[in-house]
Image (tube, rainbow, N blue to C red; front, side, top):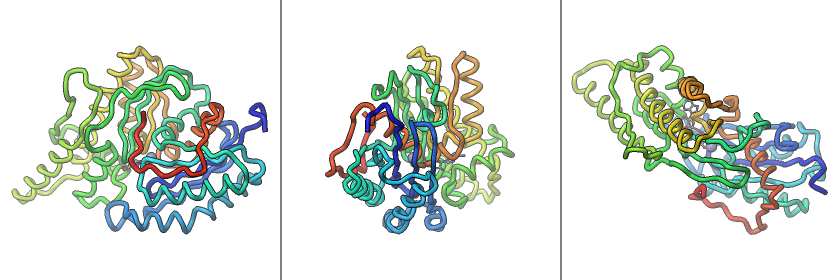
Length: 340
Ligand code: KG4
Ligand code: ZN
């Protein structure tokens, strides 16, 4: 197939607790987008149990592949390539997606495209805003990652900042777990915060060294745990709405401040927010306001494309397809893969 034809990419994602398969045409037309969540399985443990996640991926991935093709009204022979997340993530979980993609690529004689999960999150914005222009500043905030990335063009970027300890979503999940709000904690804290006072409890904001674009959320996590202990010792009730709102505001303040600082440094006109935490209402509103105040345009995907999905992997795969950035059939999962 020549690259002038319609490009149809199947994306496969299994890096954590969602099994997802999508079929995307020309990097923007979503023909099918299936996500099988495992929240029911892991919720009672307060976090993802890796072995349980791998088994569920294995049970469901082939069913999703067939269903995704059926919904897209495509055959394997209509596909241009198979794109798969190969890291970072849980090794056993990643291996299910990678093995499935390799088998399909081999059997159907299709190119295999290896996508970094963090790159996938960045491309959620190109999926839904195909008119998005370079250069831009990308903030990726999810359960496993917090990155500020300057994107000059497809395949050319510079990491400006990253977390030195916990990821933004991870700290939401850990704070929620400390007060038994279930897993994942981000959506619950987001909801409770809407009726809470963000100034009720003074939590620390870690801005690090002057001008640093790195993040650190472990101090905030300890501050929440210390606050809960103090309240318990004094036999005081914890107001979950105020706790949620005050904690969330501390995360949002740092994310917004550093994103605007990075945008100023690079003089970009566009900021793209993505990853599971990009679903957060307060973060969206605060970054929109901050960006607007400085004349930057903010882009973010609808909630379903903030959290893990395979359409974003297919979209990233679409652009790698044009760079002939293919993977060999002995591709392996890389659980600690970095964005370089
Ligand atoms: O991108 P994602 O689905 O998976 C990873 O790549 O990690 O992100 C999941 C993370 C979880 O930590 C979850 O608590 C967080 O995103 N999250 C939120 C919200 N929705 C999901 N955090 C804050 N507010 C939300 N509304
Ligand atoms: Zn993710």
